[in-house]
Image 1 (cartoon, rainbow, N blue to C red):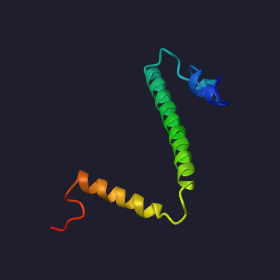
Image 2: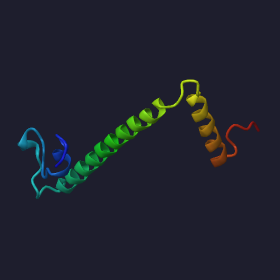
Image 3: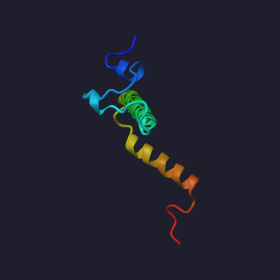
Image 4: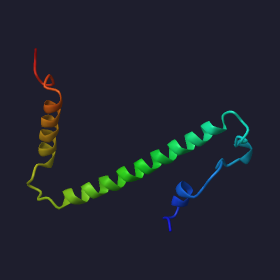
Length: 94
């Protein structure tokens, strides 16, 4: 069902330390922290994978644009306009 390696993110439970002796027992006061840490790591990995996939998709779309189109200038202009709209003080001397 999952891609190779994805089962670690979605189906594994409990401690995944290489040395099982490093795992905290359930009665340890820091045991809940271990679970929260694992959830945070999983969310970071999922976000990273999503960003990587989105970057590839954007690169694919950009590769279809004609070479004479100055994409960098268009992106810089759009960013500058967005920043100016969100903070009118940016770019203005006092």
